[in-house]
Amino acid sequence: MDYLPIFVGVTAAAVVIQAGILVALFVAVKKSTSRMEALATEVKSKVMPTVDTAQSMLVEWRPKFDTIASNVSETTTVVRGQVERLDATVTDIVDRTRLQVIRADELLNRTMDRIEETSDVVHRTVVSPVRQLSGIIQGLTAGLEFLLGGERRRRHDVSVPQDEMFI
Image 1 (cartoon, rainbow, N blue to C red):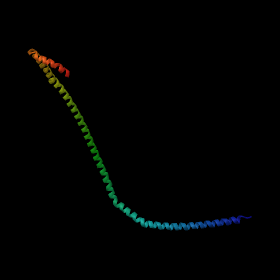
Image 2 (image 1 turned 90 degrees about the vertical axis):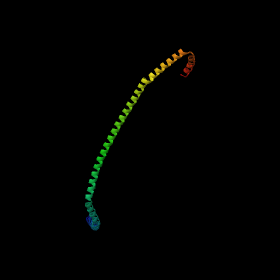
Image 3 (image 1 turned 45 degrees about the vertical axis):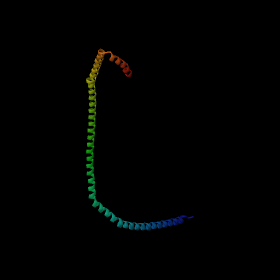
Image 4 (image 1 turned 45 degrees about the horizontal axis):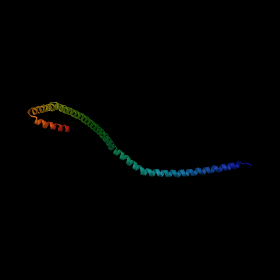
C-alpha cells in the first residue's frame, strides 16, 4: 500500500489549516492595531492637554517652589542658631545657679560655725563666770547665815533634804 498520497493529503490539509490560522491572526492583529491606534489617539487628545497644563504649571510654580525651599532652608538655619543660643543661655543659667547654691551652702555653713563659736564664747565668758559668781554669793550667804544666827540655818537645813529629793 502506498501511503505517500495519504501523507501528502494530510500535509496539504495541515498547511491549509495553518494558512487559515495565520490569516485569522492577521485579521485579529489588524483589528487590535486599529483599536490601539484609536485608543492612543483618544489618550493623546484627552491626556496631552492635561500634561501640557501640568507642565506649564510646573514651569510657572518652579520659581515659587525654589523661593519656598530657600526660605525654609534659611529659617531652619536661623532657628538652629537661636536654639544653640538658647541652649548656651540655659547652660550658663544652670551653671550660675549651681555656683550660687554652692556659695549659699558655704555661707550657711560658715554662719552655723560662727554661731557655734559664739555660743561657746558666750558660755565661757558669761555663763561660767555667772555660775562661779553665783557659787561665791551662795557661799558668802551661807557663811553670813552661819555667823549671824543658827535659826536660819536650821530652816535651811530642813529645806536642803527636800531640794535633794527633787534633784
